[in-house]
Length: 192
Image 1 (tube, rainbow, N blue to C red):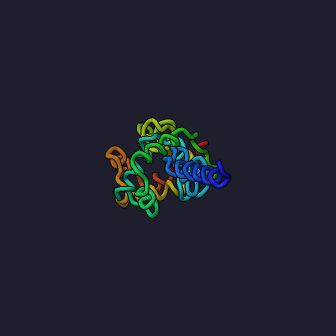
Image 2 (image 1 turned 120 degrees about the vertical axis):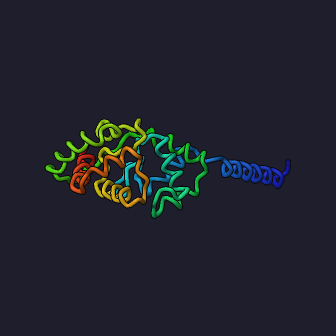
Image 3 (image 1 turned 90 degrees about the vertical axis):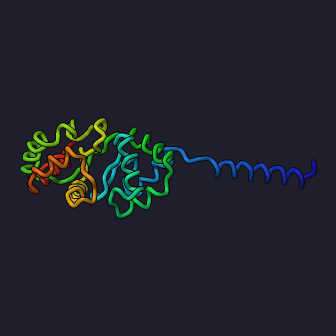
């Protein structure tokens, strides 16, 4: 074979391999890694207004992404991001996020409010957010060691109707004062 044909075959093979690589679907890990810009490496947020997503149940992530995608869940950025993913991609990324260990933050909390929040937790929250909000099994989202500003903003969104509260939660939250809600948020934020 001539040098010219050999070069053409080599270049053609390289282009075909490159095209194959480009057409390969992204893996769940690749998709989940795109969350790092806001939610931190392996879903461990370093920004106090952005939640850590590591360790949440896959169904929780799927439901949240679909709610953002449809506009049922209020957001500033996530609605636009979620619209860019197919159902299969969301499911693949959710499986990876669910496999990451729950992140523990290091933040300042008020010890007196934490003590009060522990009582509120036992009276109003423990049935759905068991193990101090650390288990994904309840599909309620990880509250354990979340950033305090994020927890505060979330409760404000629930109370304002920007985010739909489950019926049990709504019934419990309606009975709590703003002071009690702040205290229980301090409790969740304090967990290590």
